[in-house]
Length: 212
Length: 212
DNA sequence: GGTCCAAAGTTGTCACTGACAACATGACTC
DNA sequence: GAGTCATGTTGTCAGTGACAACTTTGGACC
Image (cartoon, rainbow over all chains, first blue to last red; front, top):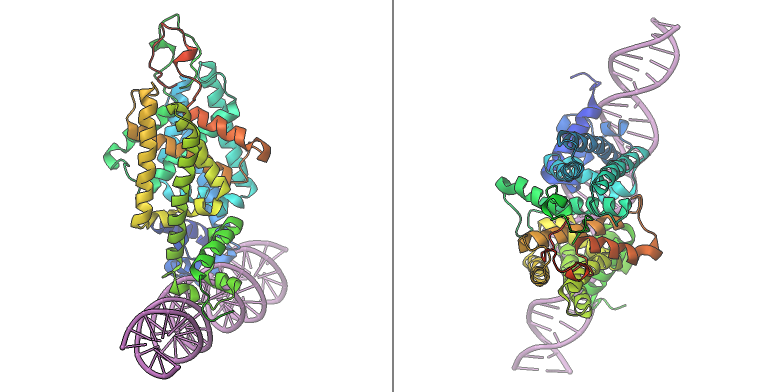
């Protein structure tokens, strides 16, 4: 082992993500992390000013991955605006399950309250992405009377809530692993149902599809 | 000051709630709490086995208050099932704003993961309350094709998400204090719109009001 | 009214943590 | 090969949660 580790920063981030995924953010300790990696207890300070700084870095990286993940899913879903919007929501929930460490960090209150510019920009980007998709879905007849902002916030809140409830293992009536995909699909369909446009209605019915 | 404090347990809970409301759960320290109250650093241990135990007690008390708060709001809303269901959702979000310490504690991952029987029962009770209300709303024609469980989980997830986003001060596009009530009303109306039953439709239209 | 005793506080201590300061190492530059 | 600067290291400090051992107090009981 050389005196200089070489890529300690990356190793710290990876190992921290693993610890968070296994034992939660509370259980993360800079000293334990350093011990684990085989480096002195003060080494992490060279790369992260303090614990919050490490979490912030993790959240920033995670938020970029989230955007990539979600955009890839939306693109794979095709051009139908309703299908695309739905795919966006499902991908968000899936990300929270596939990368729990990133997701927990991103939504951690302490981190959220002291977000840096990079993290703030990721949030704005998320808002834009969903807003664009919502506008297209509105053009296809969905929720014509609501503002785009309201729709975005509502949709974000819902997928965030679904993710939170899936992360809470003690919640009753939660699906087991085999039914997870179907569960997510049902939940997001309650936000936007890609198969419920005018086609299922007879011609004389109102073309606007106001919800509820 | 007598040697025996008298009602230290209650004072601890109240002061802890105040600290959490002001500075968050992370900032809560048993020693600082004891110092603050003017009692020795080990005194809290007589009443709460450890820090998690104090948080658990706070969460339990909070969950009872939440149920009372929400039921009172629902009862005040009248007998129309849709209005009642809507009131339930709005009250949930309002509780999170009015009693942030309780709400944060209830939804804290660590607390949620190690819930005691009392807390678990409160959760089941919440599920029952919402399920009963959802059944009545379904009988009035709302979302006839969904299972009650799905509706409950979906609704809970959404109000939880809305509460989470309101608690996050850095979120863009969030309402200022004057518009809060209207914002909450709009968000919950997207779950269930109490003013959108069949009455607004002409007679030959489908009586079932499938969403989206 | 004196005695016992358990509940409720106290002091003292331990291991652990995050943060900081001072020092050591080594890679790169000129 | 001297200088310098990023990157590690050692040493230390105050704060924390948890625990053990001791003290005070107010009733219960006779």
